[in-house]
Structures are given as C-alpha cells and as structure tokens.
Length: 336
Image 1 (spheres, rainbow, N blue to C red):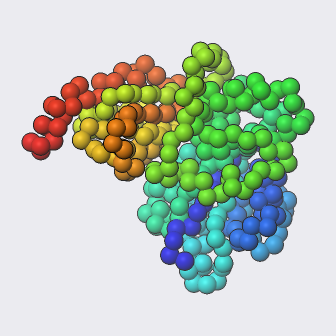
Image 2: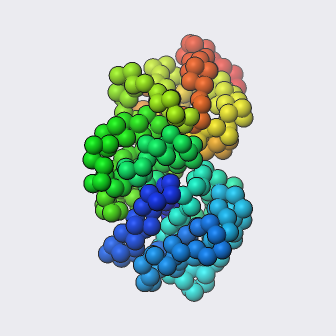
Image 3: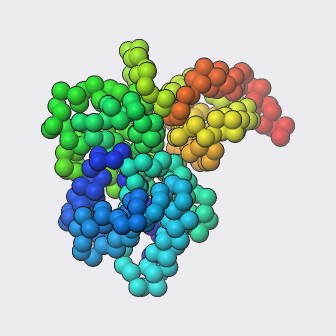
C-alpha cells in the first residue's frame, strides 16, 4: 500500500483506437483492479460508456483537455483516488489515463513531477501512443499534435494494420525517424501482450537507454512535413561534469518548450558509474546507473526528441562538454 501507484498515459490521435486498447487491457485476466481516467471534449462524454464496466473505477473529465484547462482536475482526481485507496474505500493497483485525441501528453506527464503530492504517491510508468495505420501519414502531415504524440511515446502501437498492409513499412520508417527510442509493435484491435504495456518503466531513470546503433546510419531523408524529429549523440570520451551540467541547463532553458523527451546514459569523468539523464521539456533529472566494469569501454549515448531541434548546436555543445584531459579533470575534482 505504501508503494507508489503506477500510472500509464494512453494517447493517440482521434480515432486511432485508444478505447479499443483500454477495453483490451480491462478485459484481460491480469488479476489487477485498474482505475481509468478518461478525457473527452464536450459536456457529454461517450467514451466512458464504450469502456467495459466491471470492478474498474472509470472517471470522465469533460469540457476540456487534460493538458490544459482540466489539468487541475487531473491533480484533484489523482489525489482523491489515492486518498480513497489509503482509506480502504477503493481497491486498485494502477491507473490508466486516456487523453483526448488532440492532447499533448507532455503536460500530462509533467503533472507527476510538478505536484509534490502526486509525485510522492504515483509512479509514471510510461506513455503509450496508438497510431492509426490507415490515416497516420495524413495526420502526421497535417497535425503537429500527432507528431508530438509519437515523439513523446515510450511504446508505439500500430492499429488497423490489416486495413492498410501496404502502408505499414513506410509508416514504421517514418515513426522511427521521429522517435527512435520507443519500442514499436503491431496491435490490431488492441491485441498486444500486456508485458509490453504495463510495468515497462519508460520514465525510470535507471532504465537502460536502447537506441538502435544503426539508426540514421543509412542517411534516411527527413520527411518535409515533420517538425518533430530526433537527434542521437554518441561519444567515446568522458564528459566534464561541470561543463555538461551547464550545457544541459542552457539547452533546457532555451529550447525547453520544444524538447519533448531527452534521455542519456553517459560516462562522466571521475564517476565509476553510468550517469542517467532524463528530461521532459524544462524538467530534468539525473541518477546513478550501473558501475562501469573493469576494462569496459566507457561510451555515452543520448537521444533528443523535439520540435525543430538544432542538431548541430546540440552536438557541438555536447562535444565541447567532453573532458579534454582526464588528468586535468581528476586534479580539478581533488582541488574541490
């Protein structure tokens, strides 16, 4: 009961199949009780009527989007759910939050870090984005919010692939250009193993950063309609701790609104362990990862996903943040 309650954000553009996915999760024999917070525009929401009803607690937020006018309600409801759980009035093991199809999941995710009461009682597990294989290409061309939802994802699920099999390969290539860090699965009618959706710790700073080493190696062209894109940095030299902190703080300060997600596993001079960095817009955190083994090559990798990213500036700043001489850095640390 004292452990943080895991929460999963389910997002995706209008008609992508979010409710179908939620029904799939709620109908599965996983033995857990789940509280669902469902967001819909308009005074009379209908998605709540479409969700299977059982022992789940289904709450609708109408007249706005969780990411803006209803965000205060989201904090309030999460707090009330936790209060009732602690008082024994409700029994549930996790929370699923379905955003409206027009929502930016970034501010929703920030709710779990900006409000101290929520941060103490909940653990944001992951953002799962459902992508409609039939309409996604046009949606990505015409709606930046669709790109934002893809860029913010920890898991990408392709729905309706049976209706557009000839479009799937091109769509997957485009999605991976936008977001190389998210695992991708085909999920017709919401059919996907729950192990790929729940308890995946996409927001866990200690989780390993998995980015395909061959990503972008083939020189894939950037899609002209995509403002959301990704930049992957790889380095063989240790970072200077002070330079790195100054540079990342400056990047977050200047480009924060356009930085959707950024995460890295870094080698820092004088640190025997991996330094894990993760950020959401202007919010950034760091933690200690596994120790570097004796004789192991100390390499860094960091991925940035955002809007119109200045890849050249980011790479130059990171290169300049690397330690020029390990001996000099060690001496500086001894002096401090």
